[in-house]
Length: 348
Ligand code: TYD
Image (cartoon, rainbow, N blue to C red; front, side):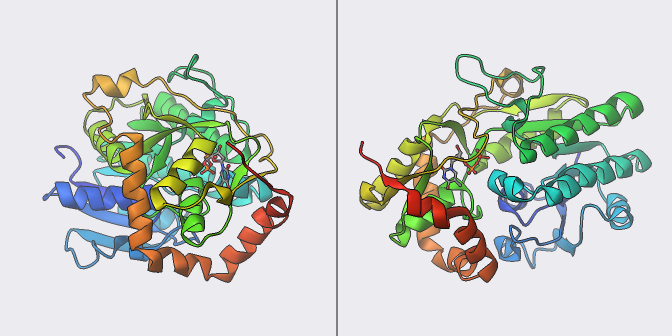
């Protein structure tokens, strides 16, 4: 990485952050990574076992909202990549407070640090396709489209994006926003649909598909996303937004069926359950801008899913520890207890 040898990653113990750190350490011999993470339920230090002991990697336990700490670490960084966020839509519907605190105020702290540390070349902020609200293949969102978030998580990310753009406009800060579609891969917390369905199937538990299951998400393999990020860190223009699409649109019901097929489990495990409030029917992005930088996805949907399923099958210790945690069990009961009781079997 020409411009960014010293990378401060915030939220590096989560799903995408940990995959990105491992990607950097594997592919960039000259990189130095500081990982600032406060280890919420979704952050797991064991995600980075491979990195611990590597002299190029340092873990710092702390919160992205801790301005003193962030400013201290910013001193040592050329680039900041922000993954620190509360990300689960269903949790944001139950209680949105932590979403505003981390996703909005946390970004403000980073921007403020960027203002003080003029030597930092870039802040790359990870956003989401959800900020555009419902979008479809016929009318995919492009980067200049208006933001119409429809759930508290998406609204918190939209707020953060606007803060980033305002700091670029007002202070000329080198901020770049990245809006990916749904990412799939190893080490994602089992609250999210793919790991939830995979780990449920592995335990012969029902797969709760919301509503009619015809909602569409576009899927991108995490390593493809890491390559896009690397390119955006190097070549992304300050003040710009980059959509990153997978061009792998799938209905949720098809996702459930594919996972069961890969694992050789019966489709009778699928339950259609009461829908998520404000559930966006579909997301689709127009991503010519990142493609013009020379990026395109390499792993197709089936291969991405097979690799992901294989990881969960081979690393049962990782997700069993989460299922054994009373806090996750309480969440599961609250989110799925009555939903599953009302659920109906799916007949294809
Ligand atoms: P999710 O993984 O929560 O990501 P997002 O809402 O950010 O796209 O959900 C992906 C899709 O799967 C979404 O349409 C909601 C659906 N879904 C279910 O059908 N059942 C579930 O138990 C979960 C968690 C999600």
